[in-house]
Length: 316
Image 1: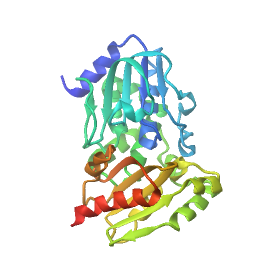
Image 2: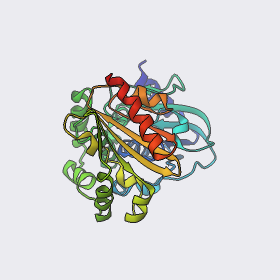
Image 3: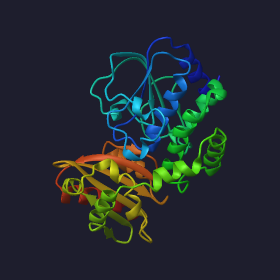
């Protein structure tokens, strides 16, 4: 019995409450994973709930089921499915009551919770792993409202199919989902070509901070005051890290986001030169070789110097 069959049998056998959860500050892959799983399982299970700590960003609210996401766990869950998250603490909840926890994820780093975990670093997105499970469960139940979130997660986590280790996996999954009645062009336009004017004002402020270090690293800084001035929040800046990464000859792009006084969220993106997941893990974070994140406390200058200096060591 392979890993997919084990997890399918485990989910099918569950007669109690099932919770579906992912990490705080959810990106497209987290949202696509939980909604794809939720929209599928509610066809078979009467007691399934999807939970996210933070609100769904504007760009993903068009996805089917987004309005049904709960913001807090509600009591005890017999089975909790942790999707696209390296550890249960990444959900942002201090306490979650559950009997069994199963992790479905494609991050290099993280915790294994059970024999039913389905983990594969080769997968371009967590939604592809979810798709593997749903195809084995009952592929005839993969309807448009299931396929659309899964495709959105794949599209965003590959950066519009710019990133990934095995593009054959990405394209095969995309082709399969496209055959389920989704409008690939419409999804892409809603995600990549639908920004509010104030988001461009936020980007303008962020780009004024653009700094290049030794032609190897480029970074931008998003201060709390920028969000206040433009009427935005951190979810509006999820894609901004691509701008420092796009600087010619730069190998690593960084986005420093001030979440609170002396508390920063740091996004790392690379061009397959160094392993950013290992660096992020040193700071208590994690991720993939070319896409990782961490949280760190300190004043702006100290935080920037600490992270940049650590990455520079990889080039020495």
